[in-house]
Length: 423
Image (tube, rainbow, N blue to C red; front, top):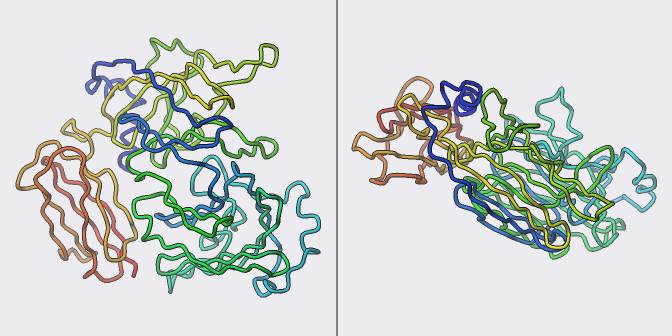
């Protein structure tokens, strides 16, 4: 939250922004997701493309870190989800008759394109009940989520499967799927530990396999892909979604060469860039780029970028053309540096967590301490003799369940972060 607050200050007040301005240089780049938009590209503003993978080989995506137990469906792959409206006790009794009216307007469940953490399996959650996660209910005593809903899933082949997300416990998702008549039933699992450092772990119903297809979540800022948007009705669009914790501000209409981020309010909606910066002209049969449009992107490394799209190749090649400029370091500390602590994951942790750090100047006093809520130090660890962006594993194996405060001293600046242990 501290980084987000500082970013708001940075973009809103020129007096904060100016001292950290660096010489800007426009860099032209092209990201391609292939003919027919078959791929998904994960892109770092600082380091370019981090991965370019098939976007048609998975059906379900399971959240790895965080509290929402989000489960996405692959709209690009024409996967469609509907709530069965039956008790889990009816799993074996479901028949084709239960799917009558399934496709009626308003019944379809969609991923929300404003947040990674609002998946199709979650959007039926009762907003008044913080423990209701849509597909299941969280038990505060056991820290498990028990599935209480059944779903119908229409696959890309047109066949209909019944799906039951049975539980999430001990960092493992348990789920089942089968044909409507109960044949070809599969009971399987997806372990979070197999996808450490990722936003999601993926599963293909078509092949019955898990897929590790994302780069580390700290290494990318933007996803280029075709995805399903609600619009006034479900429709596949090709656009750009921001990674979690990446803030974007849109400026329109502006002079692309002279515009600054002063006074703009950053948004954490992942679809702030989205797809509406382009439009298809049916008279010329060509894609047109909305002029006078500039995006300012605060990346995972703490830098502020200017992003301007210059072209789009459409389904012929899936090319996104743009130029970018690095404008400044953001999320600055009082000493004028980047924040030392960029991320903690997993949090809640079991036996291990990992810190992502930026160390400007190493010295022997750099270190991390963990305290319980009574103020007792329960762990102390020195930092490696490295500078720049590093990852630091921290063993929490000997810590009991509970809430702790983590204190990090780097470059003479003390940073505090909450850490939760759940085993």
